[in-house]
Amino acid sequence: MEIRQANLKDIPQLSLIFDSYRVFYRKKPDVNSAKAFLGDRIMNKESIIYIVENDEGSCVGFVQLYPIFSSTRMKKLWLLNDLYVYPDFRGQKISIQLIDKAKELAVKSDSCGLILETEKTNMIGNNLYPKTGFVCNKDSNFYTWDV
Image (tube, rainbow, N blue to C red):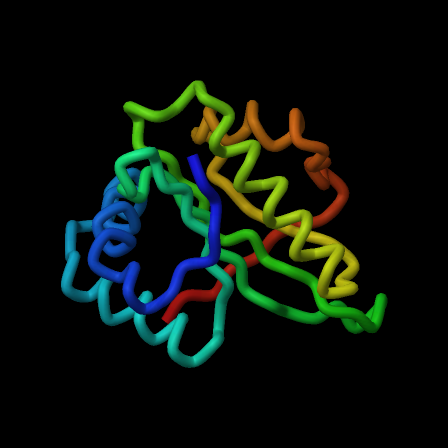
């Protein structure tokens, strides 16, 4: 398996796995909008997406990271926003490899680290992240405001 940064040529395959990820979070399937969304992120350099390809060249997992900034630390901070591996490929440490790739980006870009959020019901993620060095911040409140 190979991990590499996604490019515009990857959009057809990437949009399929991205759509599966969205469905995992109870969103309606919409591959065409996924293509447009991912294309915009890559074309406008608004995110970094790493994909894992199996030996047949099919995308079986991905992670998407967005740059943000920490004012208190006065450095870039990466939001690990999306991480997904097709169910048939789970248990092969692909998620750990994708997280390691994200950590490499954080170090290489001289950032202050990675942050992420997942649902309390996401048992896969909530078991995975502590194993990869993430610490659950129980001291802060997380607020949202939706339009």
